[in-house]
Figure 1 (tube, rainbow, N blue to C red):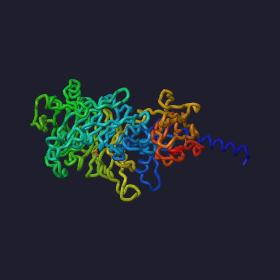
Figure 2 (tube, helix red, strand yellow):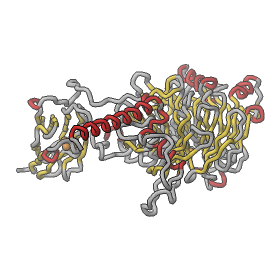
Figure 3 (tube, rainbow, N blue to C red):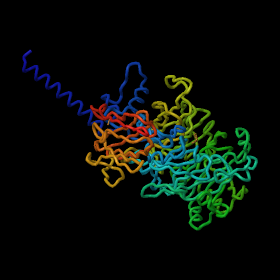
Figure 4 (cartoon, rainbow, N blue to C red):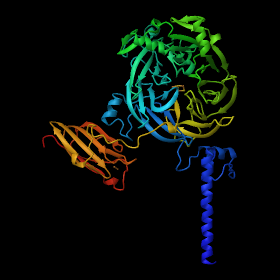
Length: 632
Ligand code: CUK
Ligand code: CUA
């Protein structure tokens, strides 16, 4: 073939190819539905030997290189004390955020700041994350979580994805019904799981449970400017256990709804004795009224906190009968209904907030218990939806449907908030506890995705021995029938998660230069070591690929305060810092100054090095910490 002709053919073929790629790209831009499919060149693909629904599920979860997930999902890490961040729909785990437990990957628990936050505790049990809200919608500013074990709450700032504050909550044993957010993040609330004598450390024999033990509801106030948490006030409650609760919204704004179990007040063999009564309660609290009582001084101080006895504030607490040991309670997006999930009873009971208010106005009570009026069940309940066995939690899609997990059935039931009929059921694997819908706890859920957070994974993943992971399953809500798209393993334990549209969160790329911050050093001329008696302060900086200074000599027994500033302001250039054989490890993000303190109690020579691969000369980023023995 003639050389010129060959060239022409090659060029026009190349042109065709470029045109095709552009066409596929443009069609993907015009039709976001087809975005994932476009990566394969078209929507209705069939692959030999692969069922069509599997191909479609793969397309719906595939996020091609260069593209990003549509949602963040923040999942509790249970007794790991962490929060896990997933991208949805890919279900890739993007990040672990340490909260209540040290995490050497980022030096959390070694730096002075994180050490002080963790205090004396070595672990925590994160159950329920809650995103901050404005007008009932997630606003992408903060994430709050509870510690069911050591009675704490924490704030994670979503500009840095870091734990920024940990708050001790007095007077609550196992703040399990938490955290749930009021619609404008005025408060998040926590209710006790375990009854106990308050304050902590008080002795009373277990037989005195009914008399001396209490549960408590705490309202933690959130500073709207910076998210700073402080205990606003607490409410003294009977020794009944609370499960995950919810705040009223729109129509029911100003109220909080808590489910109880063990209104029997049993203290032994709870498995049997806490399920004696046919009915327990949803406790409805008018938090605006209680807030006012706190402002008016109607409280006692218990362990430094304003403790309100609700019997001193008539009209602030009512009991709504609910079937046998209910589990979670959930408020519908419009705030019109609150739903008690039966757990032992095979129903989700739907209560009308309007009817509840009518009962209060007409004093339509069927009795009272512990001084609280019990509203008339028949009047307030609008439906008992036969969802199946073991209903635990409910979420919403914004299209008029509710989704309830059935722990015993290993299913999720979809049911109508209009007809209160079950319209679809899907098996999940296995034993779901919570579930998480896209923007599912807001006044305007997105539908689209639902994640089932399952307690057992059994045969779902390659075996790793007797300890199995738990599992999460992504479910497509865009079709009439729920469809499982994919399974991913989760580590202990996905109690609850919240899913937020990714574009609502704006993160920092690097830390800003701030010469006013203590210990910060931005020029190598200022890097130095200062001594004041037995106190040595190191002002060190690190950048690709060395530390200034890279020799630090102290005397055995010195108290060392060490500042390290990462002066690489480029995105993703982290410098780590570990001192060999000194059990010391930290990490400084671009622009960040970290601080750690320790006593140089071992003499000798100890290399230190950058633990985070940062450049071609990362191996050279090292130095020596030299401790001169006493008496030398
Ligand atoms: S509780 Cu209901 S399944 Cu801790 Cu949220 Cu786990
Ligand atoms: Cu700095 Cu590796």
